[in-house]
Image 1 (tube, rainbow over the protein chains, first blue to last red):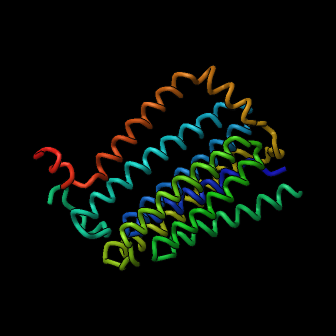
Image 2 (cartoon, each protein chain N blue to C red):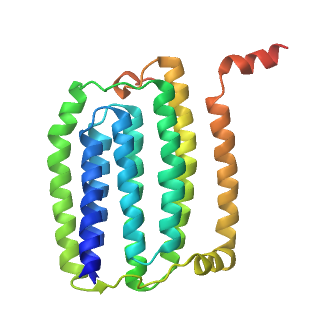
Image 3 (cartoon, helix red, strand yellow):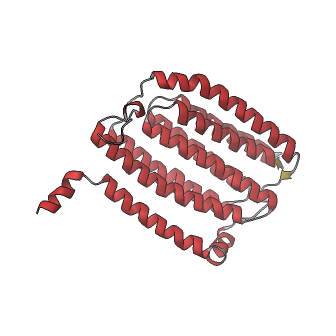
Length: 100
Length: 172
């Protein structure tokens, strides 16, 4: 028997790690991975609340979040490839113009 | 008791992987620690009884998405990142801010959600149940999602295609 708050605290820690990585990382791929970490933390809290309130729609929603995350990863990584092709760098400090 | 031990072990693994993601400088190391986080999260889902979500977590996240990440890291030959002034300022303000925020949220959660416990497998999310829900109550969102994925595929192909090859087609 694990208290439901433990799951929520774990998901909060994961989300906080994701936000911190989003702030301190300078490599665009690492920033993208931090976003995935945040999505995972939110998914855990969805499943925990689904178990708390006996509502299976929470798990369905996690499924949809995963689909959106997969689509986001595909498009985001394609954008990263396009950015690297034009600028030859992955450092976000040097990618500060929309136009070349 | 066993559940608590399993939860603490894999929760610790999860947090260790997340912290390792932050500490590592090379993106490939961050990607591999993210795989550890996702794998141990799948075990947490199993503890909560969400079998379908655990399976999808391993297949889609730890499998497909992370392979995509590793491919892109290899393709772009991403090296170690260098620290800049901006990242130092972010560390100075970001980490204390996040610590304060997470302590606050944790305190509220412990105070408000209290001692309610959930036994392992409390809410059986077997693939059969989830599939029934998905194709009855959530049929419209499911179909809309397929359109979203189709758009994502086309967007990825258009964005990642080489600009020169596109021009070559127009000229010929």
